[in-house]
Image 1 (cartoon, rainbow, N blue to C red):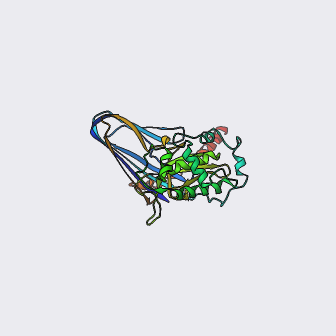
Image 2 (cartoon, one colour; image 1 turned 120 degrees about the vertical axis):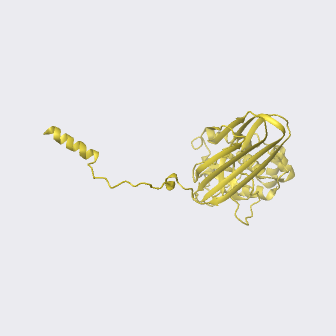
Image 3 (cartoon, rainbow, N blue to C red; image 1 turned 90 degrees about the vertical axis):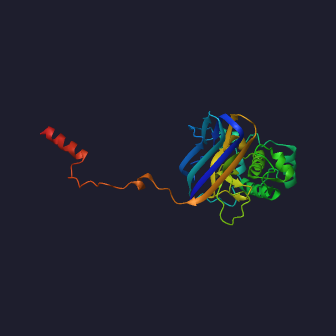
Length: 322
């Protein structure tokens, strides 16, 4: 399956600003069943783009605009191919909990066991865990994570505007409402408390026509991935109560949202500004390869057969020996 992704971010300012510095994490990752086929970023005002790869393996672009401007527009376009993913078993081995040890985990996994900025334990989180019976279960971790995914989906209403991107999980816990970012942070905090390495995923979701997805089709999406030693990273989407599949397109991974915002920057100017975002994800045809554009304008005439290089060397050696 091929998807075409268009992501536009527009900042408007109350008065001219200058020295805008911006980081962008919008490029879909290319790994496992997901392959990036094309990607480009355009900015207005135009700016020179620079890029690096962060320690999570995310592609990060950055630029600055020094001249005065009242609007900054960033548009990214990508084509991604998603191939068939592994079929998960109904449950994991009952011994899977015992595999969370130094033999099966490395330093990257241990880093994702520590609670981070948006997954801090709190009295509200402890109360929620107790209320829903989410203390570390005795069964296998895959079944437990599926149950946790469903429990969070049922416990919270999806409603934008209730929380902000920098809201702690206590806000959603108290309101019993929130968005995909909040649900993912809550599930990460609980899974890490169980001893399961978990990471936040920022990306996109393709919404089928007439789908029952709770998340918006015109926005980015967020979910999480949990590490099971015998299965690898497994994605869970508590917003829609599904295990991630070919509709989920991964852009960046990190400990939580603080590591992977699509845009992050600063500027010199007034505080008041307006942010507008538009996202579209649509199925598309396989991208045309560069070779497919080529048309032979002047074909070569059939050349006279000549000896191959090994044959020429052989004949030269024979002549030298005579």
